[in-house]
Image (cartoon, rainbow over all chains, first blue to last red):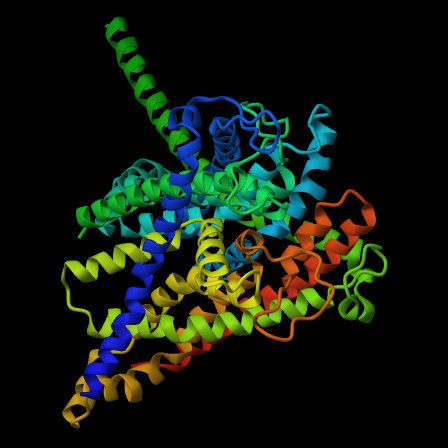
Length: 289
Length: 307
C-alpha cells in the first residue's frame, strides 16, 4: 500500500515536466491568440517594421528575427569551426593529462553568467573592435555575436567530441594502417563519418544562440531594423521581451501581448531546431550501434 | 644503344624524382599534422585566454571598489554610495527557495524515470519532453512564470514567483543528472537488497539513493549555479532593479545580483560601469565557487566508489 502511494507520488513529480510544457504552450497560445485578434498574422510575418511602442504601431516581426539571425550567425561562425578544431584536438591529439586539464577549463566558459558576457561585449569587445573599424556603432551585432560564439564554444566542442567518439575504432585504425597521418584521418575519415553528430552540435548551437538574451540585450542595442549589417544597432527577439518587461507596460494591453507573440516565435523556432537535432542524433546512434 | 641507355637513365631519374616527391609529400603531411596539433592547442586555449584577460581587466577596474560598504549598502542613485546588499541577499533567498522547490521534485522525477518507468510509449514521451524542456530558451520560462505564477496564481513580483520559475527552469537538468547518478549504481546492489527481503522503495531509499547521493548533489549544484546567473526570466516576471529594502518573506519583491548588474551596465555614467564590474566579481566568485565544489565532489565520488 505504502509502496503504491510512493510510486504515484514519484509519478506525479515526473508528470510535472509534462505540465510545464503544457503550461508554456497554453500561456503562449492564449496571449498570442489575443494578440492576433488585433493584428493579422499576415502583417506579423511580412511587415518590415516593428514599432509597437511608438504611436505609429507596426507589427512586423522580421526586423526582430533579422537581428536574432544576424547575432546567431556571427556566433555560429565563431563557435563551429573553432569548436570542431577543439574537438579534433582533444580527441585525436591531446595527451591524456593535457585533456584532463583543458576539458574542465573549457566548461568554465559555459558557467559564466550571460549578463557578465554582456558586460564584456559592451565594455571590452566593442571599444576594441572600434579601434579596428572606426565606423562600428557603440551598439552592434558583431561584438555580442563574437562573445556569444565564445560562450557556446564548450557546447559545440563537447557535442562534436561525442560525435567523433561514436565513430567505430576500426575506421580510424584502417586509416592509420594505410599510412595516413592523424590530420588526414581526422578530416578525411572521422569528420565525414561523424557528420550527422557534428550537425547536431551545430543545430543545438544555433538554438542556444537564438534563445540567448542578456548578451544581446546589453550590447546589441534596442533598435529593431531589418538589416544584415553587423556594424549597426539591432534588436533581437529576446531583447524586445526584456525591453518591454523592464518598462511600464500595462497588463492586457496590446504591447503586453506582443511579448507573448514574440515568445511564441522563439519557442516554435527552438522547438523545431531541437527536434531536428534529436532526430539526427538518434539516426547517427543507430548507424553505429 | 646510346638511345637505350639514355632512356634507362631517364626512367631511373623519373623513378627517383617520384620517390623524392613522395618523401617530400609525406614530409609535408607530417609537418601539416604537427602544425595542426599546435593550432588545435591554440584554439582550445583561445577562449579561456580571452576570459582570463577580461577577468584581469575586471579586477583592475573594480578590485578596489569592493569593500565592506559595497556589500552592505542599499542601492542608491549616486554610484559611489550604491551597494549590493539587497542584491546578494535576494540572490541568497532565490538560491535557497529554488533548492527547496526543485531538489525534491527533481530527484523524485529522476527516480521514477530510472527505477519505476517501464519501456513504453509513455516513458519515451516523458523523455522527449524533458529533452525539449532543456532546450526551451530561459526567457520563455520567464513568460510562463509571469502569466502562471505572477498573474494567474497571484504571487506577483515576489521571491516565490522567481524561485518557482527558476525551479521549473533547472528541473530538466536535475532530473537528467539524477538519472545519470542512479545509473552508476550496479544492479547487483539492488538484487542483494531484494534478496534480503527489502521492498522496491526500501531498496531505493536505503541503498540506491545513498550510493548515488554525491552524483545527485553534483548535478544539483551545477544546476543552481546556472540559476544564480539567470537574469532574463527574472526580469520578465518583473523583478525590480531598484529595491530599497531587504526581503523578509517569500512574498516580498526582490532583486538579484545579475539584475543589479544589468541595471548598472545599462547606465551611461562611468561610475556605474565600475559598480557593475565590482558586482560581477562578486557574482563570478559565487558561480565559480559552486562549480568548484561540484567538480571536487565529482572527482572525489569517482575516486572513492569502485564497485
